[in-house]
Length: 495
Image (cartoon, rainbow, N blue to C red; front, top):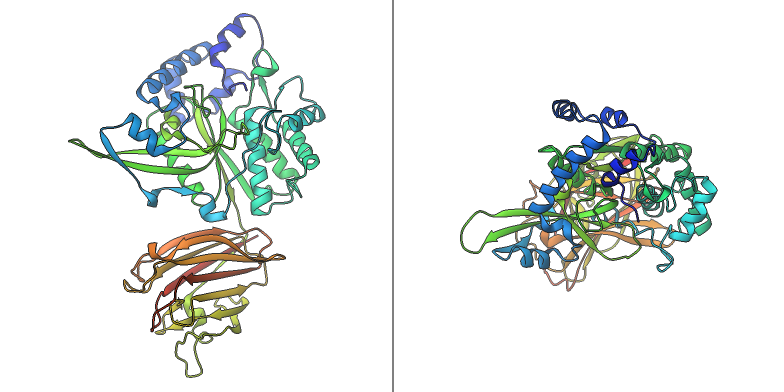
């Protein structure tokens, strides 16, 4: 598959009087103010000069980081092999996957005729290219648009944006969507259809056109940030933005120049997670940190791959982010249950049987609730308590009068003595198939200070109207109310 950026061949192509479809002045228009200053100071105003600059910058970067020279399938093994002078451990608090929030990661799309079965594999793309009438511009669709199809697939199949494609497992519907994206994408052709590329601004242009065609122009926002020159600090900013988006359950598309032999090099890839590792020197020196991106180059391999995040520091690299916008939101506070989640005497009590009650929230919204081993106690706290003999399960079940798209909330253990080993808090949603475990939280990892809880984000399928905070523990043996999980600041967002 051709790289997205073929500057190594540009000078030759221009000498041969082969025209490109993107003038270099267009590229300059997309540079930041700082980049424009550097371009002017270095008199970089042609493809040839830019090519030389990028090659010099990225050659230096590639020499200093061997991570671009190979595919990484296991971060710890890679680090032990290449940095044996350190003892490595993963910082789980600064590592994340989209599935931590949405319950899913994107699918690996693409692939050739030898890997039949992946969405948008070679035969589907070939059919879509002909249908779109772009066979004179690309012979495979371009790795950028293929990445875009992977994002559409994730949004439709897992988040519920079925306006894009009603059934993302139907090859005929996939061909139609691919043709629509290919048709609305501007390809820059460097000599032949196998050497076509899609600039980041053209990528988002095609993505946004399709999104608008399906009535989602205000619901999903895509944004590209291109690091044209590899200036200091730009890659770090992009990495922090990538982390923020992963923590909201949204994949990020990363694109780079050809800086090595890794599958992420010279390519558009969909990133669905990252891992942070600390290296402690075995003898002397300072602790170092390495961050790895986890994602699909979309070659249809279905193989977990990582890439050193330093690749974001290279010239002509960048990210495309995707943001969900919601028109409505309101907060559910623990105090909203003060009158209804108590016993007849107005005191907190964890009932051993389900109790149903309609509750009018402080926002004015009325919700239907069902609770088990859940109560409002000490005139302040909303608490689940599954660890008690003859219990083992506690839940808060809420049915809303509207769809629920995203919920953020705070949670903590009641104290340091809750006996929460083997206790989980499952975020569930209800559909035609019944209850679905969506996102699972290990209660023993929660803050043990209820006044300083941990925060969580959960993205539900868009048609969800009923959710459940469902806590269970293996071998409930406590003779008092234990395993207590405190819930607060439940923010509900929806279209």
